[in-house]
Image (cartoon, rainbow, N blue to C red; front, side, top):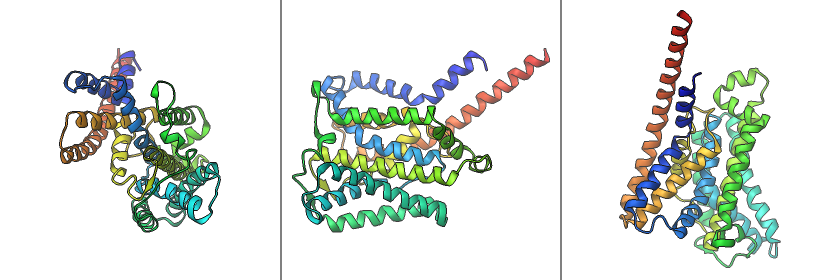
Length: 334
């Protein structure tokens, strides 16, 4: 493979960062008060919650599946945990409440993974049913909202450090760096990508593809619970509408970030770029005073763009490999 093709493939794999850079340059010139310290922090802060869903969705997509239930898990996990701490088991240690939040998210993911891998329910139908069930339960149990949460519980989503930087930003970057290391540097990461790329061949080669898929759904549930914890911290409350409508944006962010709908391809750093791209779009439209319904339409357009980009990248990649094969053949005939 020559140097030119390596550069082209690198740019193709990291296209979201090129697009994000272009978006920033455009907004610097056309959007008032965009390129300020406060606004840059706001973009990162408001992207933190969505980024957790983008990562969770991306992990399940990388195994060739999907998870529609994450937006409801975002509200369900902290909602149930807070009900335990404030009504059902009063006086619960806030650290235990945080752990319980993650555990509930993991249980939701485990249930989804079990039903899909062991019972054989289609991922779309299984996670769609959980989306509706969890949202219905939390609407019933929390008709409005629960306020006055313990300061320890809301610390990750509410506290700020030096330079007025929210702790949630450090949480976001830390989690993405951790998952990037896991997927690139560990055997689990290699098995994970192999399962999504070719499940049958992976199974034949000895990889426990069932466990890999289940782990993807468990991780998705935990990441949704983390998103819920950050959301509860940001608003200092838990309400029944948290995460509503975010599942489709999680798809857009993951696909824009380089995750393939066919599975087996994607990186956490690329998904971070996808989440920041969506956060930047939302921020710039708000600063420009665009009507909220137009913003909603733009979000739908971004989902369509993500799907088109996914197909276009596959075609471009196939063209590059075909061109390389022709070049090698021509070189061998000389």
